[in-house]
Amino acid sequence: MEILKQLIDSVDQNPDSILVVRQQTEQRLPSHQHDKAQLLLVFGGIAYLQTNEKDFYIPAHHYIWIPKNYPHNLMFNTQDLHIINIYFPGKSPGGFYDEMGIYPVSKLLAEMLSFSEKWHGDYDEGSWEFEFLTTLRNVLPKENLKKFSIQLPTTEDQRLNAIVEGLRNKLTENLTLEETAKQWGISVRSLTRLFQTKLHITFIQYVKMLRVIRAMELMKDSNLNMTEIAYEVGYSNISAFSNNFYQLTNMRPTQFKAMSSS
Image (cartoon, rainbow, N blue to C red; front, side, top):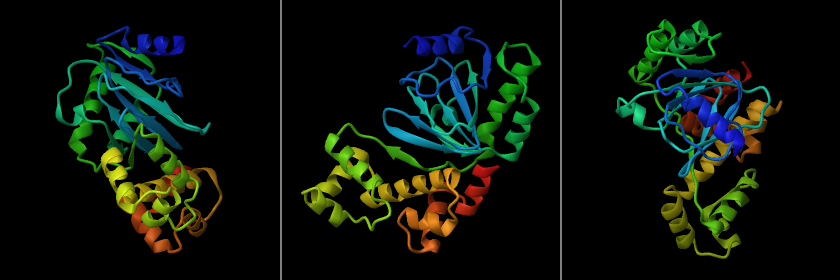
């Protein structure tokens, strides 16, 4: 808790400054929030951001916008993950800035980040660094980029969490609603209702997301080729795997593999 207090104090101690932090300071901290909005950029891996409602998966070369005073908790496993946090003060302009969202890092944003790659610490209003970073923030909604859509809903329902954990461990199998319901001794109707009322998502949609998330992890942490990865996450058809991956991430598996390896 002392580390958490130190983090929050460091972010909010200068309420009018823009703070740039390049260390991985938020890893494995309890849920917390800041008086400043947060731009968290991920390079070279996958980060996991937990909120009260959903688990967000942030792949390499993507960023997540976190509105001010939004409870969250960042986690990641890989040691070669590189992240940048930029904390912005002030009242929210609304719209884009009031919603949690994950987006790809555009060429323009990458150039701006490259220009400011040595910046670290607080920058006060009136400095040209403050103006530059404010412009960077203002650019974000103007790009009209499509959101990265893998956001796993969470629940406190213990039975459903046990079912979901069982699904995670059986991704190589042909997972169906009927077989899963039978295995857990409940009706298909009851299991369907559990997913809809507790997670607000269908069984099939949830399994698709689990498989794509596992595929992303394998692309980053294994030497398996794309056919082997497709098999490991339950696809016998590489085309179906590629299409479902694209549907959820807006990129083909080979594109994602190239990004996560760069």
